[in-house]
Length: 272
Image 1 (tube, helix red, strand yellow):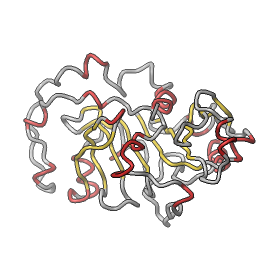
Image 2 (cartoon, helix red, strand yellow):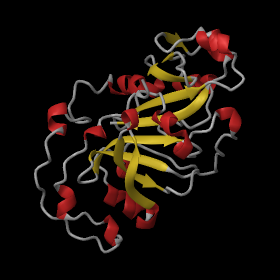
Image 3 (spheres, one colour):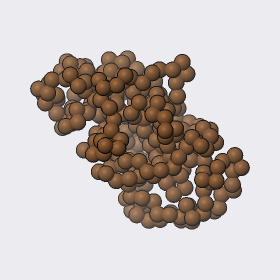
Image 4 (cartoon, rainbow, N blue to C red):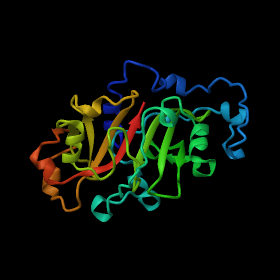
């Protein structure tokens, strides 16, 4: 099921609008040619968008990746995400990398804006893993530094514009809106949310995903974005307990059995 649970949770509040996603029919049609952009003298040549890039067909894989189940499980040899018990939590710097739902991370951002803000040499436009082994073109910040790495997916990948999804995973020290970051426990998340929340049980990769912030503080993020999470159970979690918390059922974060497997945030999605 991969990220499909988290997609449903993130877009539940956005389903009444069409700004955040394109219809299936629109995705199958190439975007209309756009006027040529003026070159930005502060950006490398590779970061300037040529007219030929503007008219390429939008890849079908640009739809939101499926829910919180990590799609990289099928490619563990190249992009495996370490279990929480197998690595230290990301260090929290005095001034952590912070995402807010405006400015360079707002809904109208672009690859060019990212390159201007973080320097062109630190922003790459390349393939990342999407649904069911598909590849999606996205802008990657600090691709060679796992503690600073960040994926930004675009609603219009041909133009590299209009933020669709921001992905925090691996060892990244980026902080999502609401002070959500990797390594948080259920108790930590409840404090940030101001109340318990709902999530699915664990899949075969021992990953559970948010289904509803239950009207808490994390359900209303300034700027109109939505924050979703996946949590991975501790390696020491008894299989019998995990089996009693199946992925096709919904649980509250206050559930004693859920707390017993000590899951921590392993992936964060910020969506428009």
